Length: 298
Image (cartoon, rainbow, N blue to C red; front, side, top):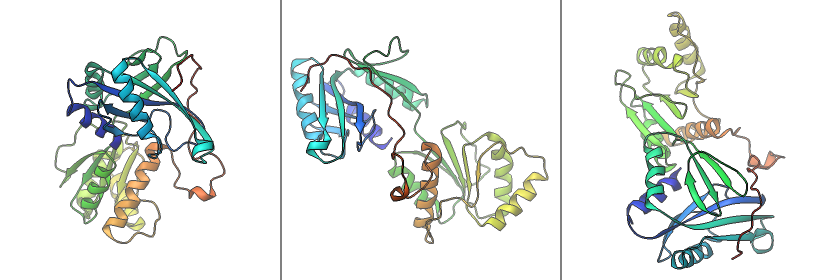
């Protein structure tokens, strides 16, 4: 999401100028980025976003400059087995991108609406899919939003970590503050370190159906909180993470914040926190298939 924000900032700084969009539309074997990774490039080769670990961005930018000059889209295939020893191959589509499409896409992001982007030989568009033949279809979810409640020592570090990841962050110093609408891409962390305030917040948040509701504190404190809250007949509709965070041996506020942001990432990206060296299956879920289509090679 951070790179997506950078793409929109790049576009807004160049409104009315010719720009190209590069999209990773297919991968085979291992690849650093997944299909749907994008970068935006101007006529001078300056760019934002990325489609790899930085290995091919220079070549993609050069192709984008040619696309902006000639007007026609281009497909590029990189065999990473031979060039980088990555045991895979990726396909990139490069095309001119209109301000109108960028504006519509940006509006979806600002309004926290999911949108469907379809990329094929005719370009990228937003909307209903008529046919997936020769197309890469991606549903883009709203940016993950983190609501921090309280002024614990961890909240400043949590705010910094989440901002660095490109999440939307709302910091409410007290539970009495008005909460924004809670959607399926919203996580909440309670860090008031005040028993009564946490109880009051849990009475409001537990029935809200949140995918992540974290409480900073010990397991014993969690039991005391739940005993108090359940006495009032509150429904447990939210996923409660208390104590909040993965077991990283964290002690300082910054380390605790890292463990909590890592746990939130796991929840919303369907991870499990397992060390990758112990994982026997592929790191990522299988990429969506791209129906082959005739395209000019770069």
